[in-house]
Each structure stands twice: as C-alpha cells, then as structure tokens.
Image 1 (tube, rainbow, N blue to C red):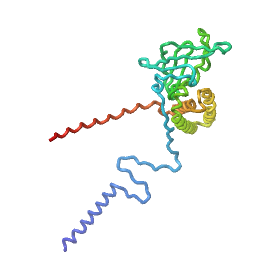
Image 2 (cartoon, rainbow, N blue to C red; image 1 turned 60 degrees about the vertical axis):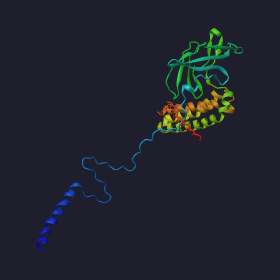
Image 3 (cartoon, rainbow, N blue to C red; image 1 turned 135 degrees about the vertical axis):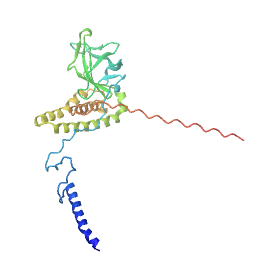
Image 4 (tube, rainbow, N blue to C red; image 1 turned 90 degrees about the horizontal axis):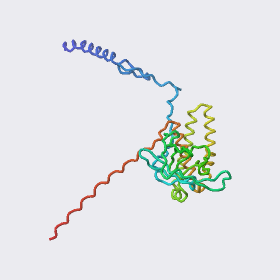
Length: 292
C-alpha cells in the first residue's frame, strides 16, 4: 500500500508534462474561432462579406464551326441561282473556279458573262478574323474576299460591283453563294434547327458582350444588334426560295454567332472528326460435326 501511495505524485507529474506538451503543439481553440493552420503554413483569411465574386468566364451555346471541307468540290451559286463557284484543293492550299454573269454597261439590259479561267484561281488564307475561314481571290479583274460558311461562302469584299472592260460586262460577286433550291429542299428541317441554335447563340453572345463592355460600348453593341436583322434581310432577300427555306438567313446568323465567339475570345476552330471504332472481327464458323 505504501508503494502505491508513492507512485501517485509521479503519475500526476507525468500527466501535467503531457498536457503541456500537447498545448505547445496545438494551441487551444475556442468555439467559433478560425482554425489554426499547421506549422509552417500560411494563415488563410476568411472571405470578406460583400467582396466581389470572381469574374464569370464568357460562354455561348455551341454552334457548328465551318471548315473548307464543307464546300470542297461543291458547285455553289450566287443567291442560289446565278454564276458558279467551286472550291478545289491545290497542293497545300485551295483554289476557286469562278464564273459570273452580269449585264453590259451602260444600259445594263443586255446580259453578259465573265469566266475567271478554266483552271481554279489560287486563294490566299487570311485567318479567321470573324471566327470563320477567310480567303482572298487574287484576280486583277475583280479581287474578292470571302468567308467560308456551312455549305456556302459569303463575299465580304468588294463593296461594290466590278466592271470588266475586256468583256464589257459589269459583274457583282457580293452576297451569299450556296446551293440551289433543289439541293437545300432536302435540308429544310436541318436548316430550321440550325437557325434556331444560331439565333440563341447570337442572343447569348450579345448579352455576354454587353455585360463585359462599358456604358459607351454598350450603346454601340445595342445599335449593332439592332442593325443585324436589317443587314441580314438586305443580303438574303434575293436568295432563291429564301422565304420557304431560310437557308441564307440561317447561314448569316451562324456567321454572326461565330464572329461574336471570336470577339469574346472563344475557340472557333473546328474539332477534328473522331475516327470510327474498328468493328470486331466476325467469329469463325464452327466446324461441321462428322456424320456417322
């Protein structure tokens, strides 16, 4: 009994030392206080109430991104029924075989036609300044700059008609070059869906662009948005069977959506097509059982 009594002070002293050691390793934390960081780490302050949130990244609904392969080898026509244009592959680049019809000046009543040559004329790539591939046709009689769209291309330069003196013919390459009504008739439902998706993308793009702009730029964006419908109507009103199929309207709306994506810094390059998975080999036929 005496031995047990003598051990009690020793055990009490050991318990006190253990508590002191723990207190040195981890300070006492009161309820509701900010937790302590581990030794050697930096203390992180709690978020300040009312602090501005992180800026929202710009976004837009996904749209189909056009590429040269969309029109390669296809015969396209201005407004669906005038002239003829075909994009072809030339070595590492592309060429355009182009024929245009027009009228003889000055009365503009006698029809005429101009061919840019039997062979395709090389075109120069200008990048994607408006979110879609842009090319320049280096033809002295009428230089042309055009944007490639889905199954069509849009001529953005020149700003007026060209007069070919050698042929005494005034030609006008401006506008949308695409398939004729017989071809797009089979795509009516697809065109309608594409236009709806492009309209949503344009609205969201303008909304995001406006949110990022200051008050002065916001007024300019509002004027641009209001004027887009009128510009589209002017360009598409002469396209073949436009009121029935809306092909030109859909393509110009997609082009505006691509332009807004580029201005917002979003990716406008087409994704490579995924390779189809190889089919598993057919199992070998079972050998016939020998007949008895």
